[in-house]
Length: 315
Image (cartoon, rainbow, N blue to C red; front, side):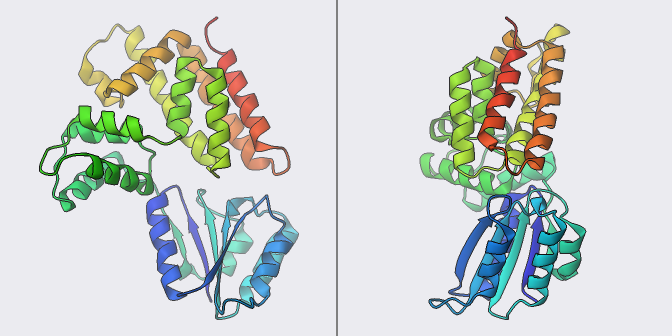
């Protein structure tokens, strides 16, 4: 049976598993759907209908955790049980589980959860990546990359590859160089959105959120990164309020690069500890709301979330 479930927040390893499936269906025509945006009946029609132009098909369903209605689950289960040999179905989600009906319909061997790497594992992943390319990187350079890049190997691989392109061969990568080039080439992400929030630039925050959603960045991934930033802000505020100035203590919480120092220093001026805690609570609340709402426009909910975040700032 060519049905697969790939779950979890580790995008790089999940992409590797997806690529392995594609190799089993060379020349296959690909169809990508976002659950919650496309009716289940339309997706299953694609699974069942023959294509005039391709003998093989791969149907990918993203945000598969939103398939919860009994009728929809039963429709997909029926399709999975009757998949033709030339058709593959891949259910993707950043969550750790799907509807029990879907999970039970897919063989255990075809199900995999890809968890985030621990901090030590990510540091070693970066060090090994550059070692394989014949380059070395400072410990602080690794810390900068982890501060500026999203928490998955897909994003890490992309940004580390950029550094290899820009920096001289044989030269050790320093924190300053990593900060310079990653900031210069940085694409819009949840971390750049946090930078706008920290700076108090409401209009650019709205713009960032729209760009992320337009790029099909999933709300759970956005909120996971923002939650990480607000937890770090809470720790930063605790150190500041305690009068601690030791750089080592700030490095421990992940604030060591010039960009991170700038962002959290700006946020410190705008939010007190209680407000930062409320920002974290709001992030969890709207994460739940956007996961649960399939009909209400995501952009409107994101705008509402950001408005409330800005309302918590000092006058």
